[in-house]
Image (cartoon, rainbow over all chains, first blue to last red; front, top):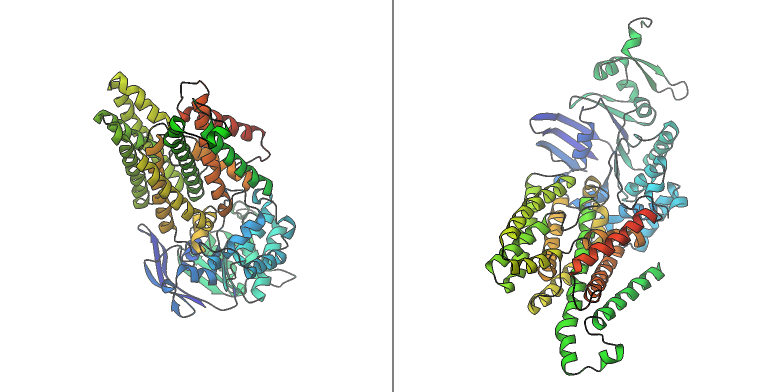
Length: 265
Length: 319
């Protein structure tokens, strides 16, 4: 559905993405992984058109993405930044309602159909209970649900998420990703930058591993998460096992301080 | 919620009534309705224009403050922290030096417009982050006020008093034509900002999120800053530098009515206007027959009220 061809991007002189080409396929849950500074977030911002590439082509369903008006693009592609800093005391419901902006536009107000979408989304994310509470009174886990609900209320066919679990503990991360998985099964294509390799392995149907602005490896979690790849890209020693329940690869990083003495592979 | 709206309208009515009735001369309601001769002249020529000016200035400053705070995501954003007060004061001083009272409002307008235009253009050219825009405004204010202090130090004594009134903020002198154009411009622009309220909701949750929802951030920022600049230009030329209203009223409004702009901007308009009319009325009667500049009153009561909310209010975080 979304494809990039020979995308180049640089902040100033330093190139961040080099000649990147990739296809995002309809219905997949694509994980983008890679070390800090490898260009993951930059790639997402290019896909959401927040940044413009210095050269290359970005197309959505075959049309040049830059020819699509911003409002139309927002109905198809929704983006959740890694952190949202809510300065005002919006309630959870008010916040989710903002997701309808691409449909109401500048002057419009929420129609019955908009309210229906908002209601259903809040139901799906189980946030009805605190609909009237202010965002800053919520816990990080509850907040992330509200943020994600707002993004989903945009009714996109492609959901782009930048580290959706970065502030969350293990249990909350799983619950957020379960929701994302469910949305994906429901037909929404998802691209997510994920820091936690094991979460990426568990949930994603395909992974792209970035290193220094280039695709180092891509494919199924089994193909990408080999210890050779992980060691090479993350500059650390690692072991890769299989999660006994899901049979997906499970990565153990090994601190250098431990390597010297006891452990020998 | 309904009671709160009723309270705002009640305050609005009270403010207008007080502004018309109270002053050096007191008019009761019955006397207000059956005026003749000199009383009629006072009311038509002095009281009504003054109430209108006070209202429209307070309304304009509050609405612009609310929009700027949302857009720049900064609790200290308002027209005056963006360098406008400095530019306007300099304009006023130049007008005073030229010695023609009639031209001072226009110089004030020009000063305000030039200073915010500078902030605007510099911010866009250099792609400043929002806090940096505020810093730039503060720096401009310091620069301008050093000029102002210089002028104050060298002007003649009789000019000193009138310059001082302008710089504190005072609604006792303005040309009638300016009032009419000010009312039209401020009402029309505020109306547009109110109807565009959803944009400022979206902007207040972050530039990236807003842009990804289809808001053309650069265009919207320029538009809003330009419109705010025009409003403030009129406010300054009508009433001088009235601080605090544009900063405090938006916070008070959000505290009581929540942050959704379609709801809060109209309240800002009414509340800001009423507050300034009340403050001006108070300024006229507190030590009759001497009139104190309204800026003194807004600073004092606005400050007290805001402190009370901050220290005793029910929210831990106002912002």
